[in-house]
Image 1: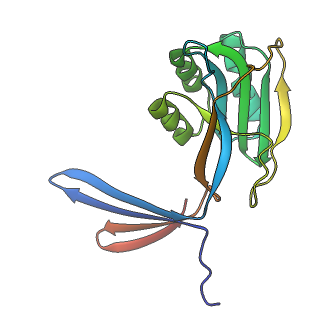
Image 2 (image 1 turned 60 degrees about the vertical axis):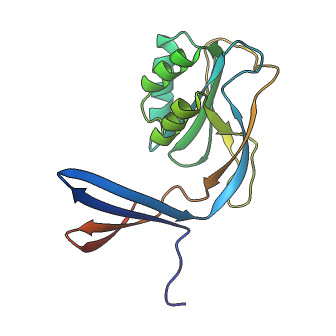
Image 3 (image 1 turned 90 degrees about the vertical axis):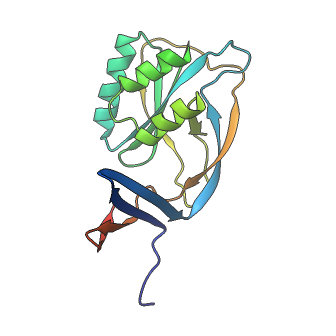
Length: 186
């Protein structure tokens, strides 16, 4: 085969109109359907547990930033999982309101911007189940527990099913910069 099709292609057109920049963005990617849980606790008057999606950090950097917010907000044990290097998901079973959840996320370094965006948009965070073992997806392993004090998980969770890309990074095709076509990795 002369050309292998990447598993994710981002297509972006940037144009300047009347001194304003406009971008059209489209992505073609292999996706998968995952089951997960949301931060919103059923029958709790709007309380949330804490969830983080940390990207582009070492295990030590992730532990350090989580420890910082754990101390600042007097949080219970934090359980951190990973399936690939430099990518972590963390859970903490303190119950907080949405505003506090968002403040804690903002005070945490390395939070995936899309995770934060969707948390604000949906008014609840969501993470795939730690025991999710879908095809093309390595199993998540518990990589650290930041100990403080123990709280039990909620008796019930709000379940969620969502689609996500199999690959986190892909090839970006940028069009419209002086008529040039630019290829690059994202």
